[in-house]
Image 1 (tube, helix red, strand yellow):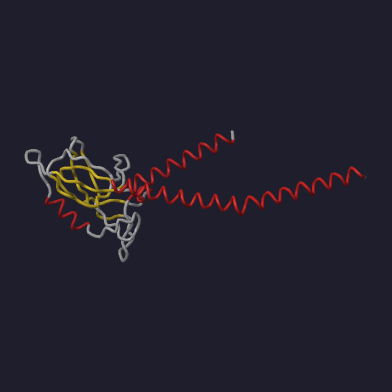
Image 2 (cartoon, helix red, strand yellow; image 1 turned 30 degrees about the vertical axis):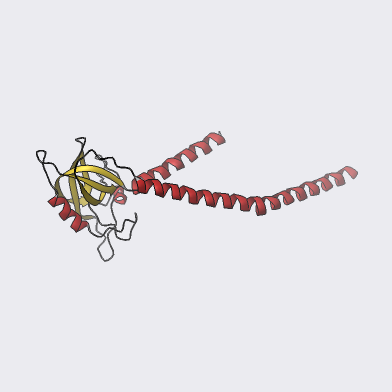
Length: 205
């Protein structure tokens, strides 16, 4: 039973780590911008953690204006993105140009008859039930929508992170093998020797 509980906890921890990476790492969509709007949003609930924190010098209000970018993907699905500065907060995108990005999105609006396609870089999730939106980071125009997007940054980042964790794991394991386990073995040997003496003393009695 204990082994099953440990296995379940490991799986849950792995899923939590994967979810954190999926939320924070950048993603790219090929979209056609259909419009922009400003929505008055209440951030007092638990979903407030999915929105950027107020920047330094700004009041920590429960309600604030939220810039939105409306778009349609190349496959016809509708997408809505928020447009917030992250500043020096987490995740570390150091985004300070949400006003400029909103102006770029407004200038990029096009219709079905004369579509203009863009690569929209963002992070986060879209959930209609909880009204959370991914945060747009940048727009880049492209000639056609059937481009193949390879997440090179995510691949390199995850490989470097895996190499770093592996290096730390090897060094910690080597430290335990050289320093900790020998001490534990000596303590166990001393304990066995002491217990043997005590048992022998009772036998002589």
